[in-house]
Amino acid sequence: MTLERKQQIDEEKQISIDKTLNKSTIFLQDNINNLQIQDYIYSPNEAIEELGLDAKLVDQLVEDYVSQILKSEALFLHHLEELQNTMKISRGLNYTPLRELAHKNLGVARNLRIKDGIKVLEELMKKNDLDYLALCVEALSACAVRLKPKCAHETITLINIKNSL
Image (cartoon, rainbow, N blue to C red; front, side):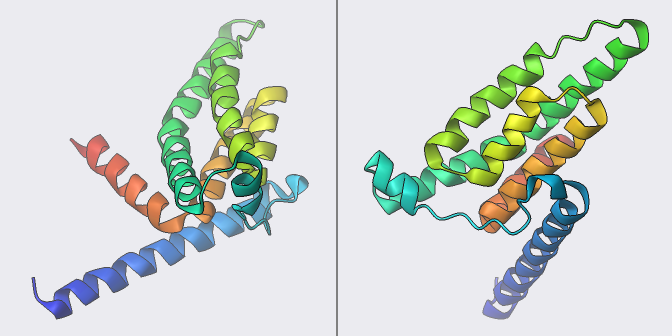
């Protein structure tokens, strides 16, 4: 691969990252404004100080969190689809699988002091409106993209490749 081709690929990747980041910000502004997270900017300092970890380790843990959130999106949506289907035939809805997945991710967000993720995951733990919960799942992914755009881009690319096989 020539240097020019590598630069072109890097530029295309950056354009894609920027577009995804912009879409994520607009989504949060337009759909989840009630949580006031659209302007949130993560700072690892609180996690570094309170957990006594070095910056490099916290950065790696945040990247792992971003990957996990994006990989969990399909599972969240699957649980919501099951709830939608159950609602059509029954009045009793079992939110437990959705809540358990949210709880698992909420623990990580709390440990890393990722405040926008905490707010969205708490909504997934408490609310019952399925349309709103679907927006929350999208918002959670948008927050993950904004947290670590490059990591998110790479994770989404891998998910898309896996899904195409």
